[in-house]
Length: 51
Image 1 (cartoon, helix red, strand yellow):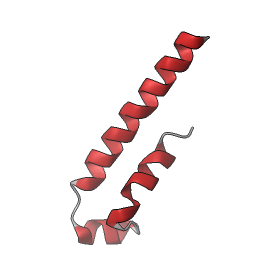
Image 2 (cartoon, helix red, strand yellow):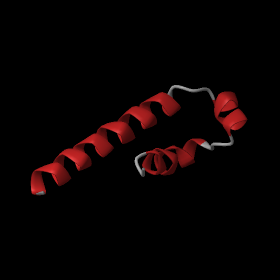
Image 3 (spheres, one colour):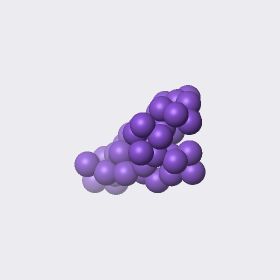
């Protein structure tokens, strides 16, 4: 059980980092089109890891 919790946490962390990276590469205009402010990127990325 503990191992699966660790692997799930690791997967979530990787998804978070991937999402932050992808959103960070978007221009301000592209973020505006999506309704995301640059300072919201970490929050949006955290939400992406919740199933």
